[in-house]
Structures are given as structure tokens and as C-alpha cells.
Image 1 (tube, rainbow, N blue to C red):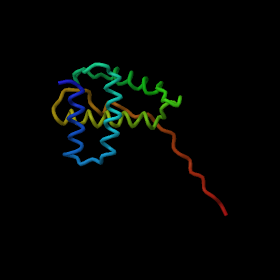
Image 2 (cartoon, one colour):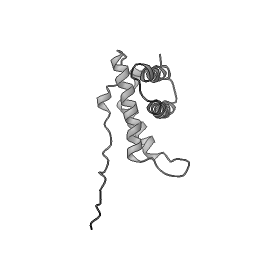
Image 3 (cartoon, one colour):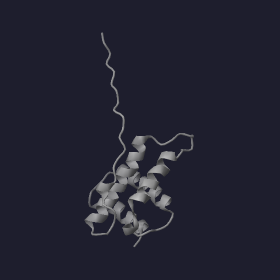
Image 4 (cartoon, helix red, strand yellow):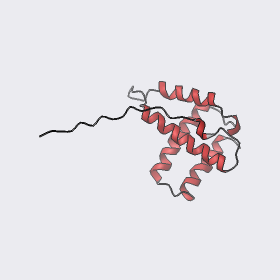
Length: 118
């Protein structure tokens, strides 16, 4: 079975077993479809490597939306969070694949909060 089928199973698992919200499932579907499209072939999960993930991260970092804007680091991390959740599902179901812990998120600058004084 290839990545396409496992992604479908994962989304169904999120809906039924984990009772995730429809918005979460929609986001997972969007982010994982982008990853699946990036791979451009229905590979076996055991063929996922850190190098492929690194190439995906480069792809995301260079991606420009329809308005000419680059994806923010936070949005790139959302893709990786979805991918890690998917890999955790695979590992939990004894599918040989890349360990999800190997995928690190990018560091995001802390927001500065300004207070109003009297």
C-alpha cells in the first residue's frame, strides 16, 4: 500500500477514532495532499527519508501563494505537524516508516506584546 491509501486511512481514523473536528481534518487533508503532491508518486512509507522531508521543507520555504507571498514559518510548521501526526499513526499501526520524532519544527520568533500605559 502506498502513501495515498495511508493518508486516506489516517483521515478516516482522525474522524472516527479520534473524533477530531472537521476543520482539523480539513487542514490535515490540505497539508498532507501538498506533501503527497510534492512526492509526485505513490511511494511506500518505508521509503520516506529525512532527505525527502528536507526537500519538502525547502519546497515549502520557496513556495509562493497565488498572491505572490511566501508561506510563513508558522504555516510551514503546520505542514510538518500534520506530517508528524500522520507518521505517528503509521508507527502506531506497525507500518515501517520514518520516526516522527526525527522531524523538527522550525523555530518561530516570539511575539512581542506591547502594553498601553495611562
